[in-house]
Length: 214
Image (tube, rainbow, N blue to C red; front, side):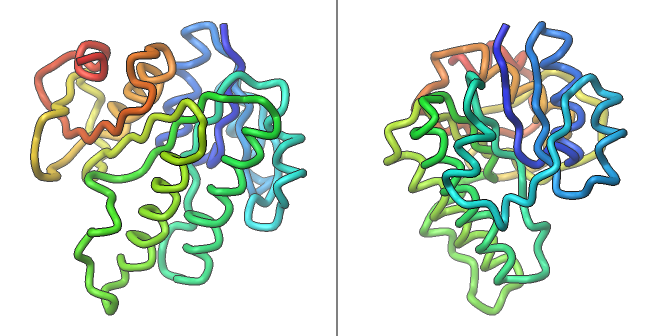
Protein backbone atom coordinates (compact mmCIF):
# COMPACT_ATOMS: atom_id res chain seq x y z
CA UNK A 1 0.00 0.00 0.00
CA UNK A 2 1.24 3.46 -0.89
CA UNK A 3 -0.02 6.92 -0.07
CA UNK A 4 -0.52 8.85 -3.30
CA UNK A 5 -1.17 12.59 -3.61
CA UNK A 6 -2.78 13.51 -6.90
CA UNK A 7 -2.89 17.12 -8.10
CA UNK A 8 -5.86 17.91 -10.30
CA UNK A 9 -7.96 15.54 -8.27
CA UNK A 10 -11.32 16.36 -9.84
CA UNK A 11 -10.18 15.95 -13.42
CA UNK A 12 -11.82 13.27 -15.57
CA UNK A 13 -8.67 11.13 -15.67
CA UNK A 14 -8.03 11.66 -11.97
CA UNK A 15 -11.52 10.57 -10.94
CA UNK A 16 -11.03 7.29 -12.81
CA UNK A 17 -7.55 6.92 -11.30
CA UNK A 18 -8.85 7.24 -7.74
CA UNK A 19 -11.05 4.19 -8.15
CA UNK A 20 -8.22 2.08 -9.56
CA UNK A 21 -5.66 3.07 -6.95
CA UNK A 22 -8.06 2.53 -4.06
CA UNK A 23 -9.11 -0.86 -5.44
CA UNK A 24 -5.41 -1.75 -5.56
CA UNK A 25 -5.09 -0.97 -1.84
CA UNK A 26 -3.51 2.47 -2.04
CA UNK A 27 -4.56 5.60 -0.16
CA UNK A 28 -5.29 8.67 -2.28
CA UNK A 29 -5.23 12.36 -1.42
CA UNK A 30 -6.90 14.40 -4.16
CA UNK A 31 -5.90 18.07 -4.35
CA UNK A 32 -8.72 20.17 -5.81
CA UNK A 33 -9.29 23.91 -6.26
CA UNK A 34 -13.07 24.10 -6.05
CA UNK A 35 -14.61 23.16 -2.68
CA UNK A 36 -17.86 22.35 -4.49
CA UNK A 37 -16.14 19.27 -5.92
CA UNK A 38 -15.08 17.84 -2.55
CA UNK A 39 -18.14 15.67 -2.02
CA UNK A 40 -17.92 14.12 -5.48
CA UNK A 41 -14.23 13.34 -4.99
CA UNK A 42 -14.89 11.86 -1.54
CA UNK A 43 -17.46 9.51 -3.06
CA UNK A 44 -14.62 7.81 -4.96
CA UNK A 45 -12.93 7.01 -1.64
CA UNK A 46 -10.16 9.56 -2.12
CA UNK A 47 -9.53 12.22 0.53
CA UNK A 48 -10.17 15.68 -0.97
CA UNK A 49 -7.89 18.57 -0.01
CA UNK A 50 -9.00 22.01 -1.19
CA UNK A 51 -5.96 24.07 -2.20
CA UNK A 52 -5.27 26.55 -4.99
CA UNK A 53 -1.96 25.29 -6.37
CA UNK A 54 -1.65 28.42 -8.48
CA UNK A 55 -1.28 30.44 -5.28
CA UNK A 56 0.61 28.05 -2.98
CA UNK A 57 4.34 28.50 -2.47
CA UNK A 58 6.88 25.69 -2.35
CA UNK A 59 6.87 25.43 1.44
CA UNK A 60 3.06 25.15 1.53
CA UNK A 61 3.17 22.47 -1.14
CA UNK A 62 5.85 20.65 0.83
CA UNK A 63 3.44 20.47 3.76
CA UNK A 64 0.74 19.00 1.48
CA UNK A 65 3.08 16.42 -0.03
CA UNK A 66 4.82 15.33 3.17
CA UNK A 67 3.88 11.86 4.48
CA UNK A 68 2.98 10.60 1.00
CA UNK A 69 4.93 8.07 -1.01
CA UNK A 70 4.34 9.44 -4.51
CA UNK A 71 3.08 12.48 -6.39
CA UNK A 72 0.89 12.34 -9.48
CA UNK A 73 0.51 15.56 -11.45
CA UNK A 74 -2.69 15.52 -13.51
CA UNK A 75 -3.61 19.18 -13.03
CA UNK A 76 -3.90 21.85 -15.69
CA UNK A 77 -5.31 25.27 -16.35
CA UNK A 78 -7.57 23.93 -19.08
CA UNK A 79 -6.32 26.25 -21.80
CA UNK A 80 -7.80 29.53 -22.99
CA UNK A 81 -5.66 31.84 -20.88
CA UNK A 82 -1.91 31.75 -21.65
CA UNK A 83 -0.90 33.48 -18.42
CA UNK A 84 -2.81 31.00 -16.31
CA UNK A 85 -1.53 28.10 -18.43
CA UNK A 86 2.05 29.08 -17.63
CA UNK A 87 1.14 29.68 -13.98
CA UNK A 88 -0.37 26.22 -13.51
CA UNK A 89 1.03 23.83 -16.12
CA UNK A 90 4.59 25.12 -15.78
CA UNK A 91 5.16 27.13 -12.60
CA UNK A 92 2.91 25.31 -10.15
CA UNK A 93 4.01 21.95 -11.52
CA UNK A 94 7.66 22.87 -11.00
CA UNK A 95 6.93 24.04 -7.47
CA UNK A 96 5.44 20.63 -6.65
CA UNK A 97 8.63 18.98 -7.89
CA UNK A 98 10.76 21.14 -5.64
CA UNK A 99 8.32 20.58 -2.78
CA UNK A 100 8.48 16.82 -3.29
CA UNK A 101 12.26 16.93 -2.97
CA UNK A 102 12.04 18.99 0.20
CA UNK A 103 9.46 16.58 1.62
CA UNK A 104 11.61 13.56 0.80
CA UNK A 105 9.00 12.13 -1.59
CA UNK A 106 11.04 10.83 -4.48
CA UNK A 107 8.45 9.26 -6.80
CA UNK A 108 6.74 11.61 -9.26
CA UNK A 109 4.39 10.80 -12.14
CA UNK A 110 3.76 13.57 -14.66
CA UNK A 111 0.78 13.34 -17.00
CA UNK A 112 1.96 15.27 -20.05
CA UNK A 113 0.93 14.76 -23.68
CA UNK A 114 2.15 12.73 -26.66
CA UNK A 115 5.66 13.77 -27.75
CA UNK A 116 5.84 16.84 -25.51
CA UNK A 117 9.11 18.55 -26.35
CA UNK A 118 10.75 21.99 -26.61
CA UNK A 119 10.80 21.24 -30.36
CA UNK A 120 7.01 20.89 -30.42
CA UNK A 121 6.65 22.89 -33.64
CA UNK A 122 3.47 24.68 -32.54
CA UNK A 123 3.20 28.16 -34.03
CA UNK A 124 3.21 31.01 -31.49
CA UNK A 125 -0.16 32.17 -32.82
CA UNK A 126 -1.78 28.82 -32.13
CA UNK A 127 -3.92 28.68 -28.94
CA UNK A 128 -2.11 25.41 -28.06
CA UNK A 129 1.28 27.17 -28.02
CA UNK A 130 1.25 28.23 -24.34
CA UNK A 131 0.32 24.71 -23.24
CA UNK A 132 3.02 23.12 -25.40
CA UNK A 133 5.62 25.53 -24.02
CA UNK A 134 4.49 25.08 -20.42
CA UNK A 135 4.47 21.29 -20.57
CA UNK A 136 7.86 21.16 -22.29
CA UNK A 137 9.38 23.32 -19.56
CA UNK A 138 7.79 21.29 -16.74
CA UNK A 139 8.85 17.98 -18.28
CA UNK A 140 12.42 19.22 -18.76
CA UNK A 141 12.59 20.40 -15.15
CA UNK A 142 11.33 17.05 -13.92
CA UNK A 143 13.96 15.13 -15.89
CA UNK A 144 16.70 17.18 -14.19
CA UNK A 145 15.07 17.22 -10.74
CA UNK A 146 16.73 14.18 -9.20
CA UNK A 147 13.29 12.70 -8.51
CA UNK A 148 12.32 9.18 -9.55
CA UNK A 149 10.15 10.43 -12.37
CA UNK A 150 7.97 8.95 -15.07
CA UNK A 151 6.46 11.16 -17.79
CA UNK A 152 3.31 9.87 -19.44
CA UNK A 153 2.39 11.11 -22.90
CA UNK A 154 -1.17 10.13 -23.79
CA UNK A 155 -2.49 11.07 -27.21
CA UNK A 156 -5.87 12.72 -27.89
CA UNK A 157 -8.22 11.79 -25.05
CA UNK A 158 -11.58 10.12 -25.60
CA UNK A 159 -14.47 9.00 -23.42
CA UNK A 160 -14.39 5.46 -24.80
CA UNK A 161 -14.46 2.61 -22.28
CA UNK A 162 -11.03 1.51 -21.14
CA UNK A 163 -9.84 -1.49 -23.13
CA UNK A 164 -6.88 -2.10 -20.84
CA UNK A 165 -4.64 -2.26 -23.94
CA UNK A 166 -2.31 0.41 -25.34
CA UNK A 167 0.41 1.00 -27.93
CA UNK A 168 3.67 2.52 -26.68
CA UNK A 169 5.56 2.22 -29.96
CA UNK A 170 3.54 4.46 -32.28
CA UNK A 171 5.47 7.35 -33.82
CA UNK A 172 2.45 9.64 -34.05
CA UNK A 173 -0.42 10.62 -31.81
CA UNK A 174 -3.81 9.02 -32.33
CA UNK A 175 -6.42 8.48 -29.61
CA UNK A 176 -6.54 6.98 -26.13
CA UNK A 177 -9.38 6.62 -23.66
CA UNK A 178 -9.19 8.47 -20.37
CA UNK A 179 -9.86 5.15 -18.66
CA UNK A 180 -6.72 3.70 -20.23
CA UNK A 181 -4.72 6.74 -19.10
CA UNK A 182 -5.87 6.03 -15.54
CA UNK A 183 -4.70 2.43 -15.93
CA UNK A 184 -1.30 3.61 -17.17
CA UNK A 185 -0.90 5.92 -14.16
CA UNK A 186 -1.55 3.02 -11.80
CA UNK A 187 0.75 0.69 -13.73
CA UNK A 188 3.56 3.26 -13.69
CA UNK A 189 3.23 3.70 -9.94
CA UNK A 190 3.33 -0.06 -9.41
CA UNK A 191 6.32 -0.76 -11.66
CA UNK A 192 9.75 0.68 -10.89
CA UNK A 193 10.86 -0.23 -14.42
CA UNK A 194 9.04 2.93 -15.51
CA UNK A 195 11.35 5.19 -13.46
CA UNK A 196 13.25 7.71 -15.61
CA UNK A 197 11.21 6.85 -18.68
CA UNK A 198 8.93 8.85 -20.95
CA UNK A 199 6.04 6.72 -22.18
CA UNK A 200 4.00 8.00 -25.12
CA UNK A 201 0.95 5.92 -25.90
CA UNK A 202 -2.24 5.45 -27.87
CA UNK A 203 -4.96 2.87 -27.46
CA UNK A 204 -3.60 -0.38 -28.80
CA UNK A 205 -3.38 -4.15 -28.45
CA UNK A 206 -0.88 -4.74 -25.62
CA UNK A 207 -2.07 -5.08 -22.01
CA UNK A 208 -1.20 -1.91 -20.06
CA UNK A 209 1.07 -3.51 -17.46
CA UNK A 210 3.01 -5.37 -20.17
CA UNK A 211 3.26 -2.29 -22.37
CA UNK A 212 4.61 0.06 -19.70
CA UNK A 213 7.13 -2.56 -18.51
CA UNK A 214 8.55 -3.16 -22.00
